[in-house]
Image 1 (cartoon, rainbow, N blue to C red):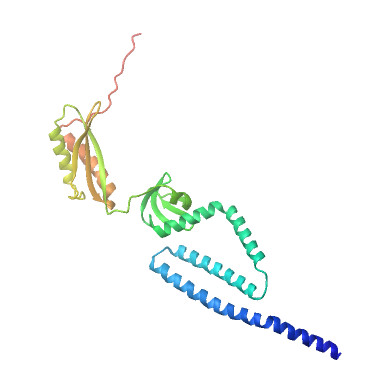
Image 2: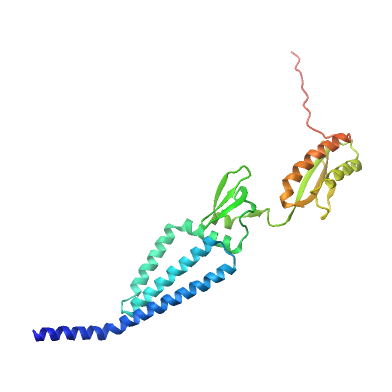
Length: 272
C-alpha cells in the first residue's frame, strides 16, 4: 500500500514539475493576450471611427480581427503546453483554402464592399448609374448595394461587380449641365432663333448665371438647323429645369413664328 502511494505521489510530483510551470505560463499568456487583444481592438475601433466608415464594415472588421487574434492566441497556448502546432496550423490553412474556394464569389463581393466603404466612390443618397442600372443608393452592405429607382423599384447589385465596373455618380458635384438640341426649319432666322432660345433659358429662375449659358448652331441636318443649348443648374434642379425648358421653348418658338420641322408622310394612291 505504501509503495502504491509513493508511486502516485512521485507521478504527481513529476506531472507538476513537467506541466505545472507550462500550465501557469499558459494561464498568464491567456490573461495577458486577452488584455492585449482588447486594447488592440479598442485602438482599431477609434481609428475606424475617425475614418467615418460604415458601421457594418467596422463591426465586420473588428469581429474578423478578434477571431484571428484569438486563434493566434490559442495556437500560442497549445505551443506553450507542448502540443505540436504545425499540423494544427496546416489543418486551419487547408480549411481556410476550402472555404475560400467554396465562397469565391461571396469573398469577391465582400472585398468589393470593403473597397466601396473605404474609398467611398458612392454614399447613401447618391444617384448613380452602374451595371446597366440607375437609382438612388439606399444601402451599402458588406456583399451587396441596394438602389431605389425613380419609379420606386429596389435593385440589388453585387459589390464585386459594382466595385470592378464603371460608376457614374450624378450627385458628387453641386452643379450639373443640362443639354438640349432644338431643331428649326431652314427658312428660320438664325439670330432670331438664338435670341428666343437665350430668352427662354435666361429667364428661368433656376438656371445659374455662372457658368454662362451657351446657344450655338450645332448641325445643319437634313431637314433642320439644330441649336445646341447648354445651361447649368444645381443638381437637385436638373429634372425641373429640363422639363420646363423643353415646354417653354416650344411655346416661345411658336409665339415667334419659328417653324419646328417634323416628318411628313405623303400618301400615294395607286391607280387601279
